[in-house]
Length: 166
Image (cartoon, rainbow, N blue to C red):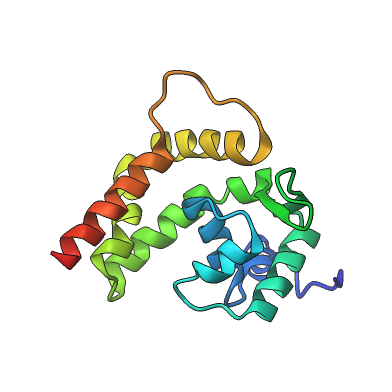
């Protein structure tokens, strides 16, 4: 990983980290799909990421501190990938990207429903989702008594899928 940067502009630096074709998609799949293993990320990629590209992006995201990698305690030969705090703090960015895409691009209902819920839920929902991601990926317990945002998003997605196939 090179330390050369085009400039110190925060937008430029963010694009240098996240602006390739796959990095945000990998983070999205970990964030919204709770995909934590290489094979899960590869097989559940709706965009059809190639295994060498996925390996490269996971390595790069790990080097950049957006993803961590640890041995999977349930299987000797597997590793489990987790989002780090900087990646979890991308939830509002992902919500805004999804909202923009819903308004300006030819999205499908089932793939846009989570973006719609995040947009409607606003910062409060984003904070709750980030707390849930911290619990899932960092082991930090979230405040008790909160409904799972992940379950809400998954339920809406599955309902839109069922509606589409009906």
